[in-house]
Length: 280
Image (cartoon, rainbow, N blue to C red; front, side, top):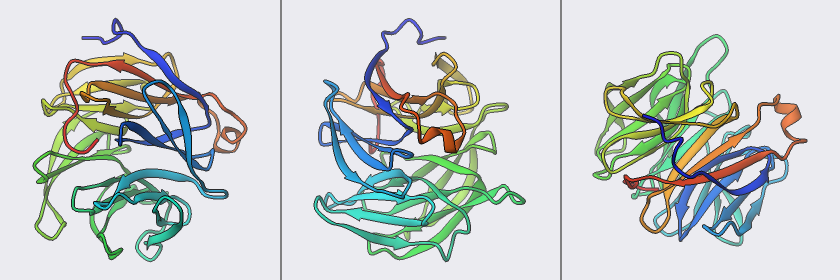
């Protein structure tokens, strides 16, 4: 089944490389990774700068229970905290992670699960739990952890293994640790990047290598596919007043150095029948 017949429109463009979308306070919040800033955009396409991060590459975003924004600073291996006026270091995990950080998901209790890039010689990368007070520890290792979601009951974490070519589920223990590892969906030949969860328990996944977004049912059946005409499918989120707006973040393919001189990243939207679930 294809979602190509659904109406797709561009919400905003001129980005370098959009990442980490989260629907919060009636707006989509996202990182422009190589544009070194965090932005918001509303459903009318009005975009506002949240905070500039010169010299840093922001990635995953999330919100603490009090409303402060957490931002992954990739190369510095830090989680930054933005209270609306001042930027501080919420957690420095450089002692736990040897490579760059990646995406992040922050639960309702303020626990943040942060992925990381793998070492060249070792494809496994740690998932770091950062607690609300900034304490951090490794709670799992998977093959290049990327997009992450938590189910509405707060009991299950699902992570995209980009190089593992699968979605993996864990039980969330009372102390925030992860156990009971199991396969949610095998995705041979496709490397999932950013993901989001809908109310039927399906995962919308950004398939960077396949240049499309897929709605994946537990077990791996692909229920819907959205092609993005050869662009990199980077990340996605469900939001809007009824959680039925699917935000699709894409960019043309460039080398990392060339990306900094481009502004062809964009966010497209379409309406889907099944709303989002859990934290946007």
